[in-house]
Image (cartoon, rainbow, N blue to C red):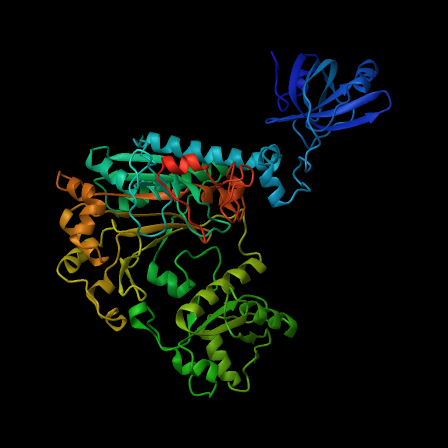
Length: 608
């Protein structure tokens, strides 16, 4: 027996017990004739003590960091207690020991505050995984997984596996493809999601399906993206949108309770996509704080603006506002005392390439009731007050205004709002706020391709009241000017996103389940009947055999874990992640394959 107890288990009540422990040497501290060793395993650390006799053996068999060690001994009370660790009131007096394996000096310290950089730790990820900080992340990931599975099992969902080697249907992100040796010149694709399979399972009568499943997308990477990632993928039959929202609010609340000990009892707010875009500048708003956007330019009724505030800024001969497509403002609470240096720093912040603005206008709403602005030579104090009031500013607030092209300005003010929320400590990592975003457009118009594209995916149903609009109208558009006038522009998707702290953690929809409507959708996306049958004939055929109404949702499992763990990067919660170039630096993958494999796969490599 290698061990009777683990290294995080022993307490005062075990004093006097004979034990056998095994683990890795964390530290070695020699004090004259006595040596103290911290022995570590997955469960914790126990201090072990070598007396004078064993010290002589240690001279012949010296211990080093990360040696694998087995010790036998008796649990005794620790004279110098360490109440920062669970085992800190006891230690083990060693009677005998055995070095099970030696270790070379590790390339970085195996501690929470390590001296290893990202690249080095990823190269030696098997060592990095020994660190307590990483272990806690994986334990949290396991807890989320277990909680989700328990909830879904209790609600009659069935875990069903779907294939990884499927047919390429390039809609959305690029597919990873796999050559078939037995079918020369043909390729499988790795699934971006199990979308069509879970719909087929609904046709098959398995009315509550789920998977905690790997998905694959060949796209550019960042902190919250990996080429392979995990979803909690779910589908239900005989449901409407309300059924889905209620079921999966319950799932997330259960995870909060099980994993974080949070009893999330408040009603989950709901917001239309249109309101999210014009109140917060993006479709996944962080509603833990205010600072809602104010449109100071003429309203755009199609996009949801209703109040005309253009008279507040027009007629002052300030060309920056006069010539801008849109002018947007936020009121930042309590910072009217910002210095010129601080406002200049904010101006430089919005000029950064990733934000892309030319400048920033501010209005200080001083606590004495006066107003000071970077444009007060154009606007009277009365006018500045009116603008500040429109933005919802109070005494002591600072109004920040951006002007320019509509889409860029809206994105920029959204990023500025989040930045100010961060600077003011309003985006607390231990505070969680859920939101449903609903009523997305079903279609977007691609000017590059001069055609409609699906906002969500091609299997999303329109709102029930708009199905006839879609069926009874042709999708053709000859130029971009026709976009907003076409009946399709007003069709809303029967879709929903769950947002947590400004992050989309889940998205789904009620699906199309009638062949006629699905064919109409494919036609709207520019597919000919022949192309639709080639790519999705199996699904269209299935819809002719009594497909039930159905819908579902998929949660970004890695991202959910990262948010619950207070991290910006999903890589921290994946055991063996890729770097930002999509490489596994530990395995040195991807890599070349030998010529024999290329011949077997009927492939020829031509890299210029």
